[in-house]
Length: 135
Length: 223
Image (cartoon, rainbow over all chains, first blue to last red):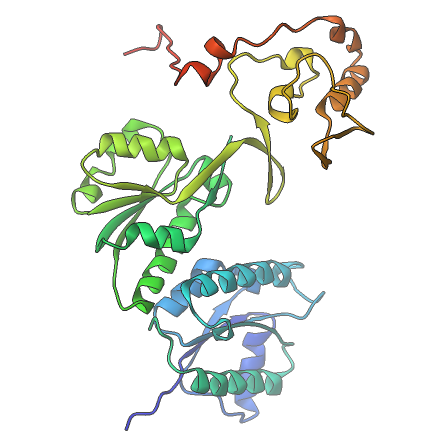
C-alpha cells in the first residue's frame, strides 16, 4: 500500500528563511525529504504566477517565507507578497482548492527551529488534506 | 485609456466547456495597465483554467500568447499560426480587441475573458475612475479640464443642478459634484468668466453614438 507523501515547495527569502533552513539542518532538525526549497532574493520577488506554477507542477502545499514585519531587508517585500498571496487564495477558492495548501509565514534567519516546526506542521496538515487534486 | 476587469473564473470556464484546445490571447496595452489582460495575466489565467479543468477531471490545451495591441489588425495577423490549431479563442483584451480578433478569425468562436468598463484615469495604484465617454465634441477648454459629460450624473452643460450640496452630487454623497469642481478649477486658473459662455445642447444624434457606430477617417492617412 503506497502512502501519500506530501510535496511541499517553500519559497525562502535569502535574508531570513533560507538561512533559517540552513540552521535547521545544522541543528539536526528533521525536514521532510519531499521539501523543495526555492531560494529568492526577497519574498517580494515571489509573484502569483510562481505560486500557481508550483501548484500546477505537483506541489501539494506551498509555503512562502518572508522576513518579519518591519524587518524586510527590501523594506516592503513582505507586505507586497502578502497582497499576492491573498490574490492566489481568492483564485484557489474559485478553482476549488483548499486555501490551507498555501501559506505565508514569517521567520527570522536565526530561527532554524521555527522553520523546521512550520514545515513539519504543514507536512502533517497536508497528510490530512491529501494530495492536491490538480497534481 | 480603456479600463477593464477580468470576468469571474466560473463564467470563463462556462465558455470553454465544449473545447479541448484553445488560444488565450492577451493585450499588452490598456488591459495590461489594468492588470487584467497583459502577458502576466495570460499566464495566471491559463494556469487557473488548467487547474480548474483538471480538478473537474478534464484537460484543456491552452496556447498562450499576447498581442502588443489587440485592436491593430497587423498584430492580430501574427496569431494566425496559433489559431489554425485551435477550436476557440479566449481574448482578455478590451471589447475592441475581442472584435478585431473575431473579425480576422471569423470561422473560430471568440470569447471575451474581460468586461470593458470605461475610459478612465488611474487615480492611484489599483483604483481607476471614469473620465471620458467619447462623446465626440470635447468642451474641456470651457470647464477647466473637467468633463461634465463623464462626471455629471445628468451630463449638464451649463452649471450644476439644484441637487449639488456641499460639493457633492445628489445621486451619491461619495460622488463629487463636477460643476462645483469646475467652478473651483476655473477660479484657480483665473478663467471663471468662461462660465458666462453658454454651451448649447449637444448634438447627440450626430457627434455621439446615438446615431449608431461612428467612423473616423483621415483622408491623408488612408491606404
